[in-house]
Structures are given as C-alpha cells and as structure tokens.
Length: 148
Image: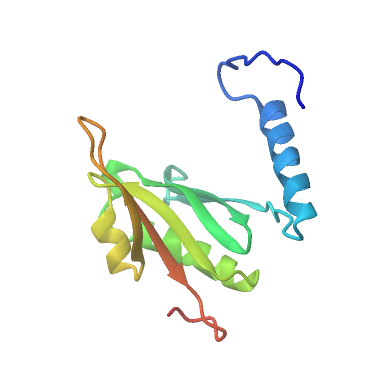
C-alpha cells in the first residue's frame, strides 16, 4: 500500500522529471520483457540561406516510430518539404528495423497529407464542443522494407 502522497504541478518542461517518469516506465516495461528503446530523432529542413523551414521530432517506442511533431513554415508549404521529412523518418525507421510509423494530427491540420503519403487512419478522438477532432495514422512496413 502506498503512503499518502501530494500531487504537485510542475510548471514548464522539466527534463529531470521527464527522465524520471521515463525511467519508471522503462523499469516496468523491462519486467514485461519490453524495454523502451527510447531513441529520440530530430530532423531539420534548412533552405539555401540556412533558414530552418521545417522539422520533425519523434522517438522509437516499442519497435514503432512515433512522430511527435511535424511542421513546415507557411512560406515553404506546398514544396514537398513535409513529404521529404516523413520519407527521411521512414527510411531511418526501416534502417533501425522498426515495424512502422504512427502519428496524430488534428482535423484542421493535415489528414489528407498523411493519406497521400500512404498512411491509413487507425483512430479518432471526437470533436466535442470547440475541441477539434484528433486523428491517428499509421504506416506499417513489411519484411522487405516497403509498406503494406
């Protein structure tokens, strides 16, 4: 039985807290024979002038690659940068022997983009009030490195 605890709000992003929570999760996962791989990935798209025009962040999680964030600056949209970032993440995931990629987006962002890139919808959170609908997508790889 756990002793009484006090729950505290930690303002801002605290790397030590994130690391401690990750360690607790990893310890529990290891007990089940499923340690978190945890490789973090950050990709940056830079134009000829050295200006960052897009980026992707994500991580390995239980043999999947999770795209946490993907963004392209407004002035660079429509030029294929998002597709290039996704393709690079997919190539890295395949090289690392992962089974696929998953991500989420809001209904007002890029669901059609992900469908065009070969992702399939795997779930939704409904639109409730002014909270927009959130949509999850995945792309699985088969043994030959192509997608299914």
